[in-house]
Image (cartoon, rainbow, N blue to C red; front, side):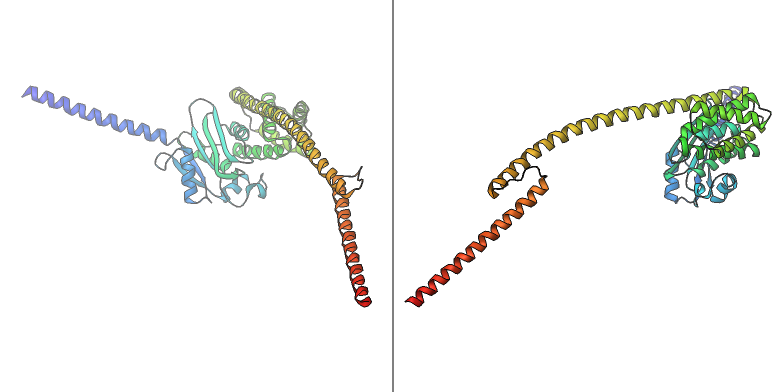
Length: 363
């Protein structure tokens, strides 16, 4: 009996341990999944929302799904973005997964205004250190709803944390300022310029507006870009606000350097693509020119033969004229010749008729 009791006790303990293990595993899975947050544009159809969930590779069961409305866009971006940039519909979406390490991994799809660099810079300003972020849409849109969704998604993730309201506002303004500047000098170039200026401002912690202006002016000269006084003042204003956040340079310098490195790689890649595109265009035009030359030469020979034949038929000299004039002149001469011939035939017929009439009278 004692042996049976011992065996039964061990079986019960093993069963309870197994149940606890299964329960613990499920809790771990749920905790991991709850890190993921997806924000969907509120004006998307249900099919489009499902399409975006498929794109992000999540389901309603393993991620926190939130809708972004136009009112929320206006709340977060209304003070810095224009009505044209915001639009009247919320379309773009975001995927946010805070991580414990690895820095910021960002990608975009179908966004015409918002770029990876803009999002990265804004997240650094907002104090986000590690996260996987995707901003996308089912068709091409500016991406402002995704911007709103990223910060909201981070705060609503169990792995994220509440973002300071002032940091959030400055981060949103940074995106808009970068986007507007990008319309003039290129989005990636603008993102890199803003990142470099921010790096110097956070590092040097300027005491006056004049010191900030010097940092901005220095960067503008280094980038060799033409900016209006209004553009510079806008950057100065943004950097004054960033300076007021009292960001810890030692804490974010690696992020800033990483952002600069990624933007530089992208710019170099774009320059390389542009160079090879120009080379391709050059050779394409070169061979097309050769092809056109042979084609025109052959065409001219054919036209010359044709014109010579027509010239012989009309017994006229039509040198030193263009082909159209040759054709028109020849056709006119042919018509005149036909007209003369017709008149001659008519005259001959009339003469014959007159002769016949005289013969009859004589008879």
